[in-house]
Length: 301
Image (cartoon, rainbow, N blue to C red; front, side, top):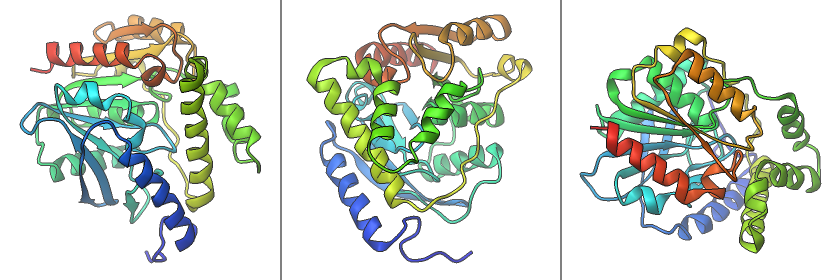
């Protein structure tokens, strides 16, 4: 398959525009990160790493239409305890460059395995995924449980419950021209962060602007739809797992997600995060980070 030199962007000008914004955001990260590309069968995958060399490895997978920069608020807490590797999704809006599209979820799980190989982490991985990244993390845990020490699912897309029609409708509306739809969607999706005064409003505005820029700069590409795990698949997760969801989650009703897990997979630890929705890592950063660290230190070996 042949791609233009500016792939995966719409043009060379779009590439330069996006990467300049990305660079500026990366320079504002609160911790020093090492950067590298890992070659995989789906393309070059960008990874930023922080925390002490030799500390237990923690791999982070971000949400859809984002990048490893989504973890900016969480890196200081997590990097105190782990060697954190935040990955730019191979088909998403960061510095990774795909050479072909994954055919299914299994190929995405195998891609992640290749990333871990490139990072020289054959076993003992702590894996945490947010939203779409949570779905990929769950697929990897099903397909390669022997490589994981622990799994953290942060409001994973589908996986436990179907995505609501309201979320889908509002997300689709973001493709409309102009600022209103994207700004409205982000204020709705990140409502608990938006309610946190000037600082919260600034964060939501930055996320909306980044989302808008990504849609303008990246060439259109099909995205694999996340899937729902069956009762047997959830119950069969062999890896110690923590499921976190905000009380105001927009993807699906939080209470129903917790109830399903309690019914079909009671071994999965669960917690409801107050004062947060799909923005749980932003609206309740310290609380979420604390639960992740406590869980991983307790079960991760």
